[in-house]
Length: 444
Image 1: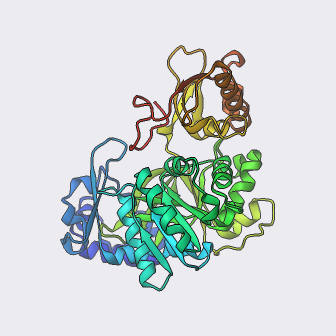
Image 2: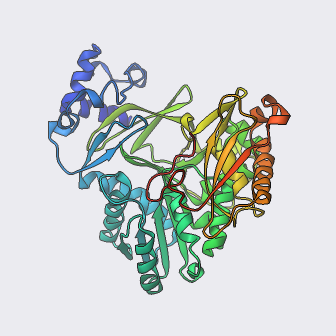
Image 3: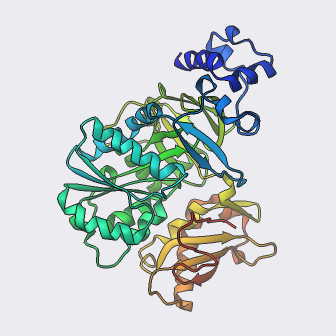
């Protein structure tokens, strides 16, 4: 069992984890079997990483490599170290993604924020490791600067056979929605992280980017500052997810929820996942090695053979015979209305319908004030789009149709007279609700 080997190495070489075991009265030598493993306490930010100096969390108590900073849900910064060796392991996930796109001359455009955050510089490093392995990749890193992206892509994309945009989903959509850019000439592929999106979103962005086959041209990464990339979409996982999006009753049966999670595959030899009460924990070697780390993401695990048996159809895509992990957006991305949990993902689908999607960006703020006559949804308009009462009514109607379709709690708990959402339209990049250049918050 590889996690046991890592456990003993970490117990011996990481001062903070040795202290953690002593505090819990655990003798590392007594942990020898899978049953012993399950007696180990979970590590968390509160009981482990925030209680020790960063160097004591690292191998041999030595701080080295590069630091990533994550603010977390509380806004308190967390610091994570990684070395180039850690990056090379995670580069395998990027290799799997790019192998799915086809090994051909590729322009990789890093559109994640550049700085202490994990996304931009980490992705840049991993992609450059692939270039060192012989992948035909040219990298440019404009970050989340739309003007710079639009300056470099038209000049460089014609020199490659495909262009891969790496970025946060709403930001990538904003870039693709820029008028008068011939995206269909650049053979665009898209790699995202940081947010659950709907299959309607994938279809919409594919159409606007001139992408003929979304299953083989997209990949969402399940990544964290804590441990890099934990898993990634494959053409197989995308085909399964798209089928489940069209059959919400089957998705509800499989995932036990009225929302569609991100569905990825992972390598258990590198990131060993466990499920506990509907949340995820993992074990993995990093600059800060983590043992049974409770990341608190809501989700679960499905073995490869079980997934193919349960989905009810025969996929045409072939994929790695690796297990699946599904990940929901955290519960803070939901509001409670008449006892029904309404998730941001439920609202997104309505805004991505053809009747309204050209008029909006897809960003919104969801609220359920006490005593409200309906859910409050503040919607960002597309560039140069004027607000109107008719547009607000159409948006409300589209959201309601798909909210009822996807969320059985909402349909049954909320009185019918209060099910129609109340829509407020705001101009593009409104500084109050949709300030540019920052990660958007969908729930208030």
